[in-house]
Length: 40
Length: 494
Image 1 (tube, rainbow over the protein chains, first blue to last red):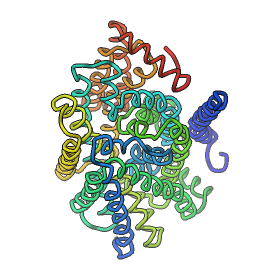
Image 2 (image 1 turned 135 degrees about the vertical axis):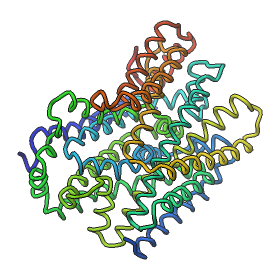
Image 3 (image 1 turned 180 degrees about the vertical axis):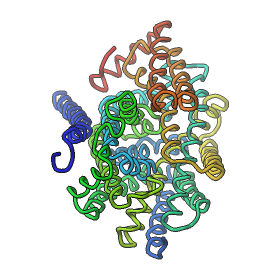
Image 4 (image 1 turned 135 degrees about the horizontal axis):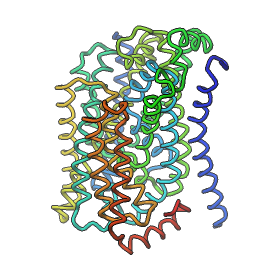
């Protein structure tokens, strides 16, 4: 147990939140960079 | 329980919704205004509106109930929903917006008709059948939740609760159209987020703190703290986990959610909206599951796990905040019902009446017809809800998967695979829907209770791809997809 929850439960929770968040943040930053590279 | 304070908070909230309805009515003179608010919505509105629509009373009652009943096993739902929402905004939203702006489409059948050059209105008629049948079931399930919520919090009786819930939604949806729907969804989404983020911070300390709560859950049943729950690592366990993840697939192509992308002001709003949407759904789902888990410690003997949320609100909080909890349940219900009503109305008036039978009809007349159809569909949902009381959780998931299995495989193939043909798309849409219904009614119990969205999606994709390979795509459509890909940013290619 790690702070009340088993390790596998923590892994699932971190995956559940982190995977989608990482995907969206990555897509957002890539799109921003494309806009910047395209210029005015 | 009932108190003047709770009623006061509720009345205040309902007056705000009525005011939003009147404010939105100025946009409803034509179909574009009534069904997509003139395509002028900003990022924060489309993000919250999309999530509030997708997350109905199922989130407040069903997902908290899941946290209560199965604990950590409900984390698979969080995984599916966060990934589904993120993927929709990251991959689907921008090309879909680009396409629908080119076509000046205001409904998903509009988009499919133009995308596949369907001159025989097959997509429109098929969409009407699927959407109307699923919207009736979905609306009835939400009104059932409204009846349960009013009865739980205020002791009004189930029937009165159903009538009150429908009455309010019908007013602001009929009068205010999609603008009222989207802005009220924003208000409701913000209330839901605030409440669900606060929920574990209220319930866990009341249960003795984090460590005490987890230890108590372990005492009640160690499976409550295991990712595979009481199934363990077995076929049934994997089927259950996968089924929960699959709930999130629907965010990729359900028409009531895609409408938000169409209604965005421009591509820039979609970029901003994605971040809001993902943060919002994380708050919703994590709060709901942990709130339900704490509720299992606080109220271990509940006959219906779906009442854990009203129990926490009614028992642990002063009357003002109990009122807020009731408002949030209603917010979740109304933010879904309003979008379903607008969706069903649009498919009848725009996709069937205007496009198939009366292309010369005046926009003003069609807009009035749209409002009448909204009322009729709401009435049909009411009759179903009053004649059959049912489990919110099960019927919402059935209707959610029926719509998603019909549209999502076809929409995804149409956006990303240039080999998709009209025949393939029609086969996929019909097949996905039929497979979902047949599985849910006849096969589910025999095969590990596998959630019907999975065979529905499998059939939808198999038929779309299989039939497409047997037929030829329109060369104009292929060139158009490449052009959209270039404009909307790099997309995964065929």
